[in-house]
Amino acid sequence: MIDFKKPLSFALAAAMLAGCGTSTSAGTPAAGTDTGSAPAAENAGTTDAAAAPAASANSSEVVVAFDADLNTMDHHIATDGNSFIMQSMCYSGLTSLDAAGSPLPELAKSWDVSEDGLVYTFHLADATWSNGTPVTAKDFVYGWQRLDAPETASEYAFILDTIHCVNAAEVNAGEKPVEELGVKAIDDKTLEVTLTLPCDFLLGLMSFPSFFPLNQEFYEAQGDQFALSPDNMIYCGPYNMTGWEQGNSYTFTKRADYFNLDPEAAETVVFRFQQDTQSALLEYQSGNIDVVKLQGEQVDQYAGEPGFTNRLTGYLWYIPVNMTVDKLQNLNLRKAIHYAIDRETIAKDVLMDGSIAAEGEIPVALATGPDGKDYRESAGKITEYDPAKAKEFYDAAVKELGGDVTLELMFEDSEASKAVAEYIQAKLKENCPGMEVTLNSKPKKERLELMKSQKYELGLTRWGPDYADPQTYMDLFLSTNVSNNQGRYNSAKYDELVLKATQGEDAADSAKRWADFVEAEKVLVAEDFAVIPVYQNGGAMMINPNVSNINFHSAAVDDYRHIYKK
Image (cartoon, rainbow, N blue to C red; front, side, top):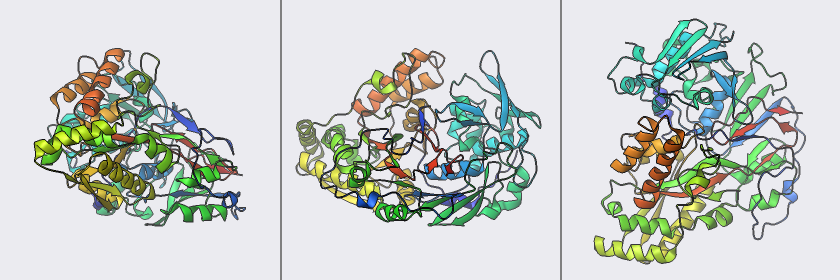
């Protein structure tokens, strides 16, 4: 059995998943195009600061501002969106995604699928690693085996079982050796993947970082230093990582020898960690940043300016209630919290960035069902703001618990999360008289670690879809999902519905599978109130009008590999 040492880079990984959900995606709108209605803001001020950015001194370099830092460049350890975006710059998968989210050939130039949908045979292109050695089928086998190996402790190992790869669950549980995973190198250029059940979204998922290959010789030579610096990495994508200033900026330089090179793509792409959006906007105006997010009143302020873009992302923010806390095992208390939160006001007046109120745990525009409708349309709205109900259920909880309740809400130290947490605190106190709510701000990485170990009561967190299917959310709350089920929700009814849809009697019947998901979501959100959906992220931003070719995906990793500046 192959021995995969757990690298020190594991300590850098965040506990939050980026998730995949729908195949809905959108390319960068033309300059000045608004892909969604910008919400109004009171006292927005003038738009003087929204002037077009100064001319860049280097049109071959594009600078993108992120409000969260890079956690890790190890694609088998990463769990957050920003890390996945940067990994996708310098690694490639079997497929890539076009602007609409459909799979295209990448490291696999073609593929065959057996008639029963259980065997995928990928034929590899003539690609090389950055050290000049060929990318082979064995690199994919080794990478997938490392992802699934128990000693790697990857929080994304589950995704191999999600696509029904043979023996994925057994390998990850240590019951079978990694060599029995359903992935095999027929020869250097032929990769065979065997499934236990058909998976309609498999080809799209082959573009996701967890499925990227790994060069065994290089990885083993690095030992515990793998992926801790550009010198400890080997690349099979269109860019090399050439700069790593932790907490500051990350630089990627185009590879001249990449087999599928985009000649128009920028020579250099820099991702800059800039948590303060006002400072980032000043840098944008000065021409030092080309892409920057907007928040709050900034959205209304910039809405009419060239380069303004507003899109709805697939990220769903929610509160997983910690069911290991005695008082939160009280159903009436959880109901009171659910009904006390005004989601519409959070989206429109607190965030003002194009976000929308969450109607359930599955976001809007995630996936289209067998009925041709968006999942959310089929499932309907299962969240509700009702102050009277909140008070009624809180009063009942007080009687059952023997007194008023004090709760702590944990959130990450971003501007948006702070604003939302403060508003939730105010509404809980207002609509549940007698309840005391304290706030606990933590850096993102620390918050995720604390929530993963159940050292919290209420926690504001998010999940972004990994693929275009409700399963990317449904799997999170299975009682067996110790990595992602932060609140330790345990429902036999929920488990039965989800497992029946994903690997049981309904797995091959699209209509029944969809119905199981709809019912399971109701159990989770509207019967057990174990998860409290809050809002779906908007994506208001300013993009230099001279910049194009960013592919934004609501259910996959945003793609900056083709970004171009005139």
